[in-house]
Image (cartoon, rainbow, N blue to C red; front, side, top):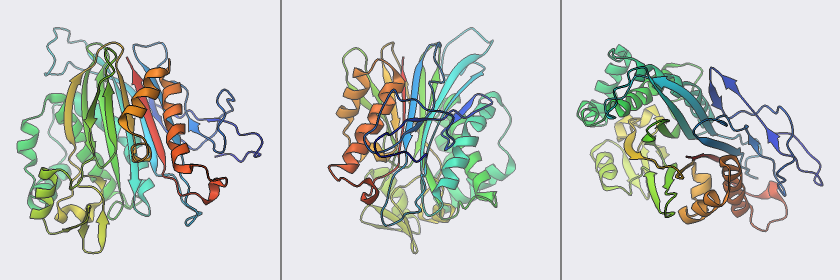
Length: 363
């Protein structure tokens, strides 16, 4: 982020484009004083999908920790546009391909968690596109991982689970496994004791069918445009959920409070990308999946726990629904969360505030 005088706080706008993939970036490409923040700067990118069927906005704010001056932002987001053959869970006679949008937020954890969240943000959209377009089997290294680490060590029936998924959902699950394996085997990524949450929404831009895949404790909500009702489409995967707790209890780890431990290593979730050493404790990179159909006027909000730890679903709904554009909604949700972390303290540098990442889609 840029350094600015205390009397003038500027908004930093970042646009990182590579093969139609938009990933949060630390690079400043210009100023936009349309929004002024009282004591912090925001990194964001211009609306990537203006002029299409959807209005999409995204924003992230790095956290602060006075006890760790060198703290880095571990949250990431991405927005990606692609096309694939018609999915088998949607009846359609058009075989010319379907346009879709991918939205994602990620929250790294561990001393080097930003390595995992950055790697996944850059590689997951391409992995999903590849799996949607492919009818081939997974690479042998991924098949072996599913057999050894997920089925044998974690006791999770991966094949049985995928047999209950639609074609699109199977592609999402496979892509999570591919990216996890690639991160673990990449010598530049410390994915053994570091990991990341991830929430991905795959939205068919014509039918508005939405498939969701998620690991970790980030969250996504659906807001009905007709009555404002809220449904959680990606929930926090922790030991608070009976099925998740049961798998952990059958593993070699232990539960202390709400955390899962394997020896001295502990995390606050039961599924994650990375965290390879936690497999024997039952922590897996296999995402939970869901499906819903959006209607015109609906909205999706994906965010990391920097938002959900301080803002209730209803507050996020109210902000998103009252803003005409998705970019304004994303920025204002992020700012509202940051203001809750900061409170009335006059010196932001002495505040402990979590990283924040938000993606908003308006139909």
